[in-house]
Length: 313
Image 1 (cartoon, rainbow, N blue to C red):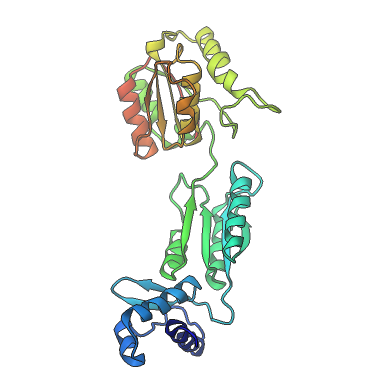
Image 2: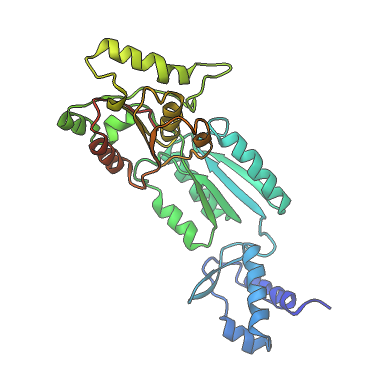
């Protein structure tokens, strides 16, 4: 004999089928189901949770249970993965591991690439609204800027689609000049700001590729000192960065603590590099939970350096 909650779940699937799984269709409340089928509240909740796990309904606290738009016969156990590029940055590794996790739970994976274009992102989101998935793992396009696709993400959320957002991977050395008031702050506080490019190197000396760590810790500071009349004193030289640049800032500072007096890491993940040189004294500020422009403003005012090197993004 089937468990009571499974019997109830079958009946609710039939009800959803009769409504063709119409998105927004509201099922009876827990109290109504308890009274109609003479079941305990716990049994009703168990049945609803099962339908929610299948992606057939989503529950709103204090409101009720609503159809997601999937029908019981066609409910795909599929997760959509949306990213800018599938063969760049950290996404190949993330995609591989996510696919394995989803597969172990009985879900397949549908992969979409936006090429970091908001127009392409919109096309994909509209398709996902028309062909609902069980969930969405997404890296938004051009996330440093206001998104024109917020309305579609809101519609997906209202439809009960679970969403997990990944941090982005785009931008370059020009972002600080284009998107913040760094030039104004530099002029006001009489500091020199250098914004070199690191591509997506993670500030490493690559086995096959450029020696970015050497460039940032040795070559670039020496070149700046020869080219401009800036102080080379440790107490006047600082390194800061945002996102991957936040990692780079601390990585560079620990590599050459005799050259950099302090480091600021903004919105970055850098737990591993703290162990690189625990005995080499350097002041590290990580992270500042502020928008990039505001954080850079506060960092500049706090440091008041004669020269500051900022790895981008």
